[in-house]
Image (cartoon, rainbow over all chains, first blue to last red; front, side, top):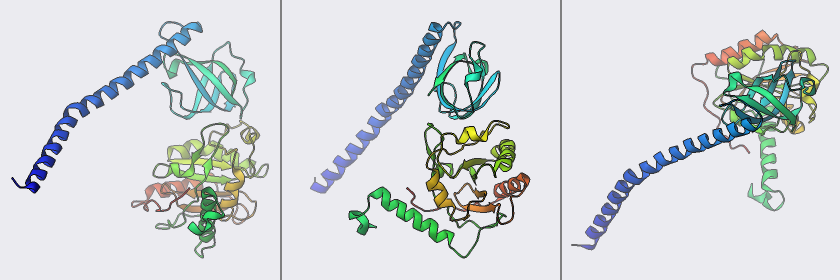
Length: 133
Length: 196
């Protein structure tokens, strides 16, 4: 067999090997990657539930932390332009209801704050704590 | 601009390029008016950084391909009535795909508080880097008067309103121009600029 034929054959064998390798391992890697992400999200959710539990929440409730700027403050509602709240909301402007324990008079438009939300999802979450950012 | 390598740092060289580009387009004979002209996309909006308090800053170019931007250069107290009107209109503009970005002339962490909350101002109000933004965009609307620039989804300035020229139009008229941009059947291509 000539040298160039050997080279082509070797390259072909290498390409086929890589193709099979990717087919077998590459797909498994993608699946594993998505499983890791799911597990990480579950771990973060459990962490938020544990923190909520320490803060006196009911079973299943979570505690999310957010940072943002107060745009308007009303007796029961605070409008905040916030960064992404991991596991709950993307960065945007959102209204949050105050828990009765929070002194709403401390928030003014333009204030930069860190805040904590408690609930099982956005619709039933309450702002339970805030402090200057 | 490699010749400037020994005199200016890279960031400074890009400032010069961006200034020359903005200055060149601003002094172009063709003018952008108060009405969106079909096929009138030629004036590339200079990029800027939208910094709102301690939130993560975002470049204007991030809106390209996604949303239109109504860039508002305002001063208080003369712009107060207009800002109130825009705050009330923001919901409709936002649904139509336009973001309002308000820029007072000077950087101040108090800019949001100064606008008050009746009605609540929910659009981004730039609190840092304002002097740079004003310097660049005042090339298109010289003076200190209230000015609004409508930037389409591709990043071109399509309409300019200045209070000292024609007075500010009703917010309805601004919304009509936004709708006009939405109706464009073949929007212009994204500019092939290299902005920093």
